[in-house]
Length: 301
Image (cartoon, rainbow, N blue to C red; front, side):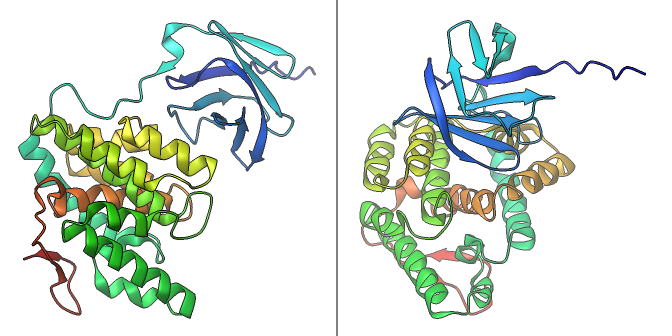
């Protein structure tokens, strides 16, 4: 009996991918990262989802992929050429055309509860709940916690760029926690910029420039965050904050928290802290304090 022929497909192509030849950089279970020196393309399974630099494939083994050629109307993977149509293009812009600011702000509180209650033990959620610092026990881990807290305190005190520099590159993994946190801040500022009709481009640019200097992944993801361009799971959270009910918000937050070891949670923490501190309106005399040994709140006084 003949086995049915399974057709391989390209489901989505990121809108920030540029034409060129990209070769193998790194390989994981459901992701193959390919680079051309300064730019990145990730070939991913549909379970990972769309993104500004993702090529989402179906029924295609990633084991043998070591190069990809991106054209304007086609993609070549291995020996197979795939035609591209407008329907393949993923729109990575995070901010909806109309922002329901009142509902958005109300839903931020529930998102914060979900982050604190469900994120991985060693995520940056301790920035919003001091009790979670207890998960960090070694000397190295405690030094990491102190540096992150010190950086956020500097940001809240109005020394935003000094604080960002302290956070930049702090942590471990493909993208350090500090870089994920800064990306979340940049996304948050993009939302605030539209919601309040304020030009925050200078602040966004200054934060981005202060955070540069990490690996290729951090460098690229920070640039995308500066431009307000996000992967699908983060976009779903933005949509749920703006339009969704409690069930949809819980689902989208849970999906984002599953990204990486702590990357999704760290990104969400930076995003939420931008609103928690009202980052744009921080004055030089502001001071950050934890409101108690068992507080889940940050107080600006």
